[in-house]
Amino acid sequence: MFFGVMPVKDDGKHRLVTTTCTYCGVGCNFDLIVNENKVVGVASNPKAPVNGMHTCVKGRYGFDFIHHSDRLRQPKVRRYLLEGGKKSHHGSAGSGWKPTGIPPSTSRPKNSLKPVIPPVPTVWAS
Ligand code: SF4
Image 1 (spheres, rainbow, N blue to C red):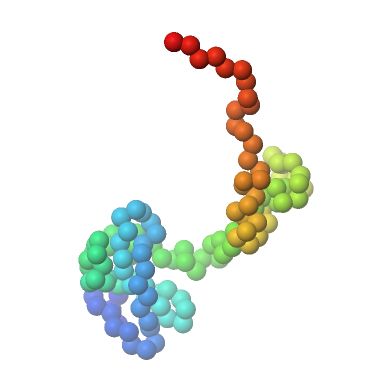
Image 2 (image 1 turned 90 degrees about the vertical axis):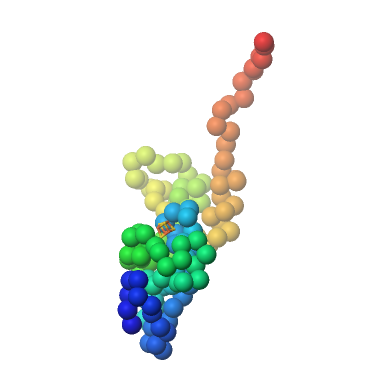
């Protein structure tokens, strides 16, 4: 098993999972090297249509966030929005984030959006 630009073979202990890089819009493909459901490295994939055997340093080595303890694992909504309170600027009751499922997190914005500019009389002239 070699990491980096060397070829990697699926050896039964490690498996390769082809994915698309999330760092920028180029859309490079490569293989994640996975051991016991943990990403331990990145290998080039010769079939990658955009980048071939190349990835930049972010794509090749920037995978430690995947298993980071601070990574969001589900959507969160501001607690005051779910509980009908007012926005707190001082971190008091009603502040913070509440983990939710996908439906509450996507329906909340459409129910909470207010016009940014209040309607005012307007006259257009030229
Ligand atoms: S490997 Fe680098 S260039 Fe390619 S998508 Fe990721 S960040 Fe962008």
